[in-house]
Image (spheres, rainbow, N blue to C red):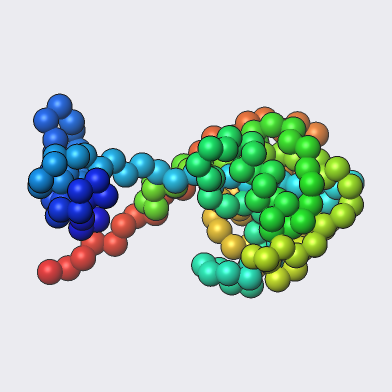
Length: 183
């Protein structure tokens, strides 16, 4: 961030009084600009023991398979975001069962939330951000072509939980060590 969104003057990174971490602070009007993690919301859409995946038509990870998910918008709940993303990416309507996985990804300032969902009908298709969508038997999931670690972890839990027919809420972290720059 270089300029204040309130007055347009330059900002500097410093720890404001009463705070404990650096923030962007306007050098003119003293507005503090907080930057917080972004929420990715999506679903594990199921129809007759098959899971619906989409092949990405956008970067990052163009051409890889993913669960339908995306960034939450302002003025919507995580449930609304998950259902909207499923409709946009897979053209599938779902009934949410409940929150299934919540995975913190602190190295990219994100939290990924996937809801277990039943498709309301077998209708689906490729939305604007998808090359194709397909229902996969659990033993036919394209593991070598899964887009993101959070999607892989969620699918691994799902396969395991389908065998037991129990779907507990699973909360975890995915941490990648930041490479140190040599000077």
